[in-house]
Amino acid sequence: MKMNWKILVVGLMAMSFGLFGCRKYLNQTPKYGLNAEAVFSDPNNYINVLANLYSGLSMTGLEGPAGNGDIAGIDEGFSAYIRVLYNLQVLPTDEVVCGWNDPGIPELNNMQWSAESPFVLGMYYRIYYQVMLCNEFIRQASEEQMENRGFSEADRTKIRRFRQEARFLRALSYYHALDLFGNVPFVTEENLVGAFQPERIRRAELFDYIESEILDIVNDLPLPSPAIYGHATQDAARTLLARLYLNAEVYTGVPRYADCATQCSQVINSGAYALQTNYPDLFKADNKLSNEIIFPVVFDGLYAQTWGGTTFLVCAALGGTMNAADFGVNGAWAGLRVTPQFVDKFPDSTLDSRYQFWTDGQQKEITSLTTFSHGYGLPKYKNIRSTGQVGSNNGNTAFVDIDFPMFRLADVYLMYAECAVRGAADPGLGANYFNQVRERAYGNASFNIASPTLQDILDERGRELHWECVRRTDLIRFNLFTEGDYLWTFKGGPVNGQAVSSHRNLYPLPTADLVLNPNLIQNTGY
Image (cartoon, rainbow, N blue to C red; front, side, top):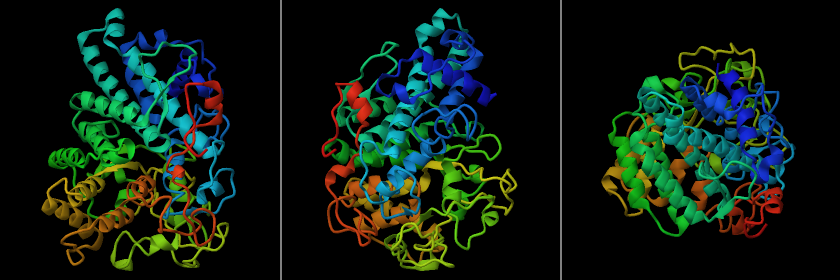
């Protein structure tokens, strides 16, 4: 049912919205002669269309992993939301290098991307494709539309909740636009359907919009429960708001750490979450059972297949002496390894359960990006269940069951701890949350830190949240991503690394959008 509705919905959305500057990158062919009215006149269809919005974070096209992709101009597998987010958030940092020469990969390794870089384009257009789909759903789920269609009050109640979930998904994508691109085109359900040139919204104004959207919907979202796993909940919205506030000084020039701590406290005090006892189980094929994950992006090795997402995170990390079958897949793509600087973040080595590096046949130092044995491997994500069984694909394909943990409790603990160190929250409580994360990692309190520093916080976030698409944002907040003395292998190009211009704290807008929309202005330095 979901895949059939995905075919239907992508067609009608592209037909009904003349996709401004990125229209040449999107498939706009109507499917089966359907239109928005034919779909949305039936209240039973809204849940299926909502499922399509969620699948926009995981799936890439109409026909599975190798078919009619949503976004043209980039390999379909490369364009998956989590995959392009990972490449922009992690690949230019100290956490990883990739040995492939596919277009766009070397320039991310070296922090030398341009406005034509494929993964920059892929992320930008993935964000706005998702925003477009959400806008149409929100428009069609308005009170006026439901009144005109004569829906019952029971149907309206359900659709109102679905509408708030769509607003959360739109806010999430706009958050990624804010963080990655800064000043961007802005469209909502209020914009008239048809070809037009969106206005440019400044970064601080987009911050205010996202904040207002989340505050407006948070109490209308459902409480967490196993029955609605994968849906946006009140705590997912609060965690997104906490992420927004944590980086407010970068986005607006005004720190909001106290507000971040408030949101973290509400999530923690909800009592709905607990740290997973065994850290590696968070990234296995049955991680949907974990009480730590606040908002997942759902994948399935049989029914939600993609070359992006967690399939990419498993297979791209396998190579050398690693046996793919031991990780529940049939493919080892020999791409991702960690920098020696990141390995050095683990001074206690194998005492830390997050130390999962593969050293057999690998050297720590990297002098050749294309040689997989240069750099330790990191098979963090495994298509093996916590019970030891293989995922649903029985190891016969590359496709995995691992859900991507977009938000989880340990991140919330560490956000609160950082706010405390910055003087905006209770220092004792902050140290307690910080050390709960460390105690889970070490199995006891022997490595607790009574008064963590900001450097302790940053290092702990690296150890705890590596390869979860937060590292670039964290390094920028600590003024370490571009300029300064902190270097890692191949940063800026040379093997030993070099500082780069601070304009690379933002990615450029695509040239095609600048040409088509005179309201937009390229980010400084590009």
